[in-house]
Length: 110
Length: 113
Image 1 (cartoon, each protein chain N blue to C red):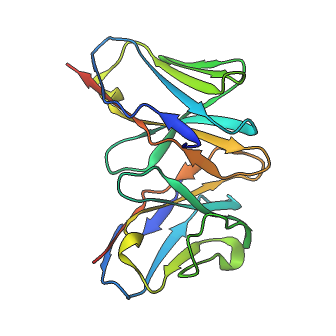
Image 2: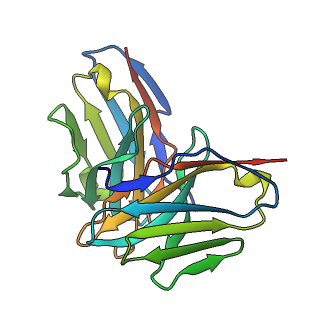
């Protein structure tokens, strides 16, 4: 079983749609959580950290459910420029190394 | 502010040869990390430096890989001798002390023939 699991997609959605991705993690000692965005053949770029209380940044909302060990990312009013792979990342307590999911591909269609 | 830089962007070598990858972190970032993505798999951790010290090298696949960070600034990752399964994209990341948010470089795409 992978430490961080994501649905690889692809998710094909029309412009303006709302789309949600989930990610589950297996290690209960996971302490820090992030969503990164990766464009084709580019480096991962931090989209947002995920806090226990949930957090929002513009059209993006991230939620953490520690009891069920999952993280979600909601994108509202999808734009063509949101097309990318979204990587779920966790870090275990006491370490700084990142554990990545395989990513979820999103394609926003005109 | 300049981001994390990596050199070269691409490298094509033959099995058995040696390759050295370089990473320059963001200025002032004491934490430096190496990660690797092989075809079809998720990005995986290789090792973590704090300044010039190896904090965690649990992800290094074998002793053909040697990472250094002399002086605590840039880092090199040497693969010697390279094998076919070493092909992939090698990412470097850096972060400030006390902060867990890591910033990634553009990666080096290594192809071993």
